[in-house]
Image (cartoon, rainbow, N blue to C red; front, side, top):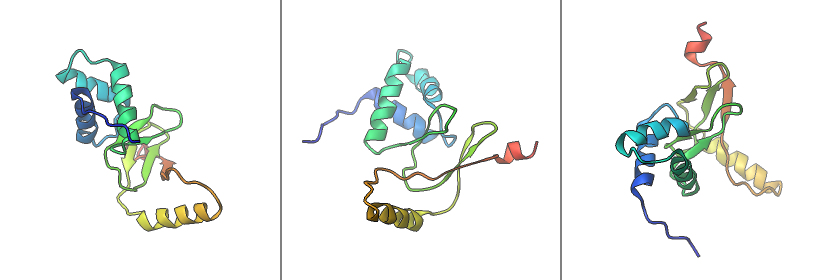
Length: 131
């Protein structure tokens, strides 16, 4: 039986903060934005709502290995460049729908139960590669 979740002001503000940012904010950055509208919110509440929004499929968590997880409101399959110098996360402007589908089919053919596919590429962002 599916759990019915009431929408809350906190969750709405957390979601809006992620949607408004094209910089893939981490939880503390989301907290700072939401706190401007709702000063009494706690960082724990922001974390809980980010986790819930991810569970609901409304945002994507981008694990950066080493830095704080980042969040993206664009849930369509697309690759991310993670800068190994500054930690910035950048959307790459290309479609990977067909490749993801083929990869998922190949994995399932091998007997794997695929839960999620996320393409992350590590390298230097445009600013760091200029130094």
